[in-house]
Image (cartoon, rainbow, N blue to C red; front, side, top):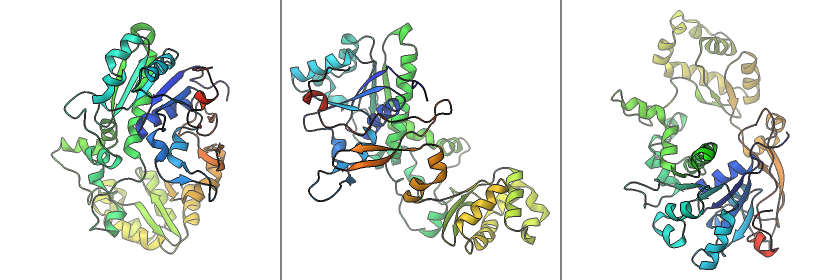
Length: 387
């Protein structure tokens, strides 16, 4: 593609957690220049497992940090000192957006509080990203990923569907990775761009993001049901029929919402007598008989291979897809066609295929400037704040 949409935008991020770092990452992959402001010992994200290492004796690199900081630069400063605060101030004077997840209680001592930054940098968009926001009774609460998932209600609804059928006694768990914190990051990136949009009219603004709120929005349907006096439970949270279907060599996800999709599914199944029951032409009746339908679908699928089911299903416009392993995804033809991955260099590891972006811009793929930065690289080479 040509010039990326955020080319020329300058972003500084002070992050010890995923949400703030992911917000900066989303802006960076769209062309913004991103600087990680780190303590002399490095961001805590650099010490988050799992680690990448080429072999014995090599310095391990956090895979999480490598992903979040890909294409960014690193500047170290001790914000507990006047010298460090002056260095950050010089950086922020050249930036459009500052993203920060430091604890609210300690911000004033570091000159990172809303009032101080607004007075010194009136045109700066200052984005605060905390588990429960910077205002309200829980503003000073700390939280981990699993805390945010359960505080947003999503954790209580896991596992569900096939998982709860297979493991009915399993306690509520969490989605793998950093799902809730990344929702906070998405909200922070959108909030930053929204404030930037009107900066010419109102100046810089303080943007207050709570990862709990962002993750809560993902479970909007469960919240909406409260209006009907219904509390959703993980045992009941599943597609009436379809969902995760075990096959001979893996699993597929199946979801038919429209009549034409159901008609295609019936053809895919070979138009069996049970599926031709006139009563099943009604979507409500199909929902009522969901468990019965799923028994038939699973008995049909368990003796067939995933690729065969998916290929035939797609020809019939049946919404169905394979559950892929990480290796499947990296080698996938569709993933390659969309340019989802880019090889980036990582010190002492080499080239690593890395997910670029969840979106395309104007139908074109985005690209990363490079791999994660060396700690304090801007300091070491005597670099200017931003060049």
